Image (cartoon, rainbow over the protein chains, first blue to last red):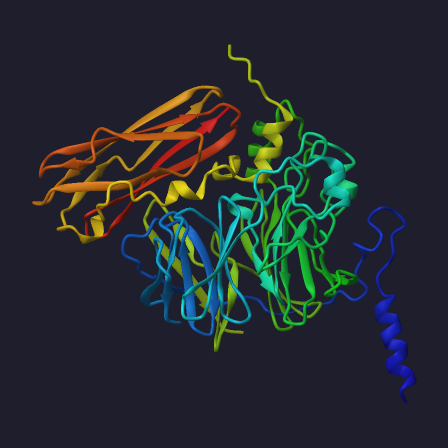
Length: 369
Length: 147
């Protein structure tokens, strides 16, 4: 009787179609990629949280304690109940034990233990416990010049992906950020970069000590195409879920970053006829490409569910959400601009806070499955 | 005709950020702990302000120029207005104020200067400050699309 589970296990372990190139061990085609679209629309409920005196630039997170929104410019953390009602500003800007001593935040997340982590623009990582006490602060990088050799062979970082694409995740004593090369010798204009660059950097949350860099750029990105960003999430069991702006697939790796499998369906009517950019016309071409081309825009996981958003590009210009139950896609529905799934508080899934700086408001959407 | 000094550095920086903050990691943490004047606006009598404008959009500009934007912070309340912790979020931006206090009806002018050298694309830079107002934190925004 035990023979068949073993056969199945061997099949699953060997299930990925291998590659005999520098991407070997990082990417594979899906073996089982089903569609069972039982959900053709989501009933989205819009909440409008109100925070007095906010900058409307910030980051979201969710835990059993409620919804949290970190104000990136004013350096504070605001707590909301699951109805979106403002409860309290639990961490303020300042130098006290419940305060964060910098008012320009670059990333924020909550760990499995309920600790709150902030990354600032000088690569300081701040850790607050569940009672919002500042319990640790580390400076892990200081504008160090890195060469190609460093990037490939050492565990030093080369640059955290600042701006709108910082992915800060804490899991099992390490914090992870997405990285990319910016040295003169090793960057996106160098063809070799696409074969050897790493994309995720783990570090110890207590000391900041680096661990070996992880991941690769998917071949789907292509040389000097407009959409080079990646997204990753770590499951409770330590599996890495990795997606890319340009790739229809989502890749799953174990806690040692060994490739397990891939899955994913192309978005509907995505315009992915990406142009290869040139250094000379980089910006102008990029702006055009961003207007008309489709790409994936976020990734999140909850239990066996995976959520991925995308923008179709022309001619539909829609923002959509795919939902997967394990590897089977169960929904591909239209969602509002800026919609990204943040997490779950029974019985709702919540979107991240959508900040509208011009109208000075915040919105959250929630839905049931 | 302006010759754009476009290099791979600009390309690299785009993927680093659409924000300007990441352009420099040298912002010292010390610069954020400036209780230079022993005054905490959070402990002062509250007044009200009007910021005109709170966003200045330069539209399309050429690279390698310095953009200067002035914001007026008018004291519309009945108490002395005091501002502190005036900070730009990018080392590419300098910021200064005409004064730090204003009587009722009077104004403080804050000037942001953005050096666009080495920048490309849409840039949004912020200056934040604290004031003895109901909501203590405030921001000023400068936007430019640099070609």
